[in-house]
Length: 369
Ligand code: F6R
Image 1 (tube, rainbow, N blue to C red):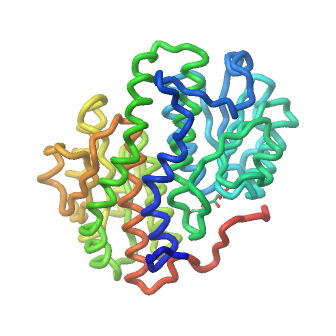
Image 2: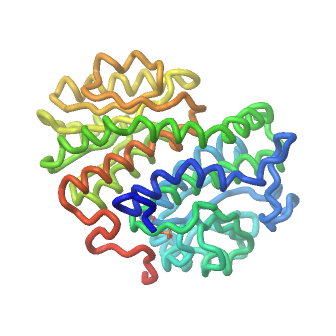
C-alpha cells in the first residue's frame, strides 16, 4: 500500500502534483472564473463580511498564515490568523459579519473544533477547509471546501498542506470575484497560474536528489534555522516544524527582518541556515533585503542553503547550497518552495534512523485539547 515507497511520507510527497490538481478540479470553469458551489454561504453574505479570522493548528496554521497574504491582497478584507488553541481563551472580537475559516486535515482536531464552536456562538459563519469527508469539523461548520489530497497516513502533513494552500487561494480569489476588486485582471491571471501549478510541483520533485544528498551530510547537526520574508516566512516556519517532528532536531523559523533584533546572535560557524528567497520580480524590495540578510549570516560563518527561483542570479555568490524552484507569482511561491523542505526533513529523519511515518510522541489527529 506504500506503492513501492519506503514510507507513506515519501509516497504522499510524490502524490502532491495530483493532490493539487484534484483540489482544483471542477472549481475553475472554462471561462476562467471560479465556481465554489459547495461554499454554501451566499454571495450576498460574503459581500457583507468585514473580517476574516482563520483558526488552525500546526501545519494547517501555517497554511492559514499564508492565506492571510492572499486574502488581504485580493480582497482588502482584514484577516487574522490564530492558533486554534489560543483563540477562544482571549475573548476574540467576532460577530455576524466575521467569516471564520477553520483549516484541518483530519477534521477532528479538538482545539480547532472548540475554536469554531466558539465562533458560531458569537454568530459568525464558519467555513471549514478540510480533507476528511464527513468529519466533525465540516459537520459543525456552515460550509465546507474539501481538499482532495486523498487519505494522508504519515503523521507529518505534506500533501494536505499543499492542498490547504490551494483551497485557501481559491477562497481568497472567490471572495475577490464575488465582491469585485481592483485586482480583477490579476485574479484572472492567477487562476491560470494556479491551474499550471501541479506541473511546477512535479518539476520540483524531479530535482530533489541534491536536496537528499545535502540532508544526509547534516545528520549530525543539532540545529537548523529557517528564514523567510512575506509568504516565505510561514514556509520557513513549516520547514522548521517538519524538521522538529521528523528529525527531532532543534529547528526554528524566523522572519528574515527579525534577524538583527536577536536571532542573528545564534549564527555561528557552519550552522545550517535555510533561506526561502522571494522572487526578484514583482516586489523586488523584499528580494534585495533577503539577499543582504544572506550576506550578513554568511559573513558570520553560517552555511547557507538557499531556495531561490530559477534565473535569480543575485543569490549565487552567497549560497553554499542552492536549491532552484520554478518561477511562480509571489503569492503562489509557497506551493513550490515547501516541497524541498519536506524532502529535506524526511531525508534527515531517515539519515538519523528515525521512524518517518510515526514520529515519537505524535499522533495523526489530536482529539484532545
Ligand atoms: C504537522 C502536523 C500537525 C497538524 C496539526 C493539525 O506535520 O501534522 O501539526 O497539522 O495537528 O491537524 P489537522 O490539520 O488534522 O487539524
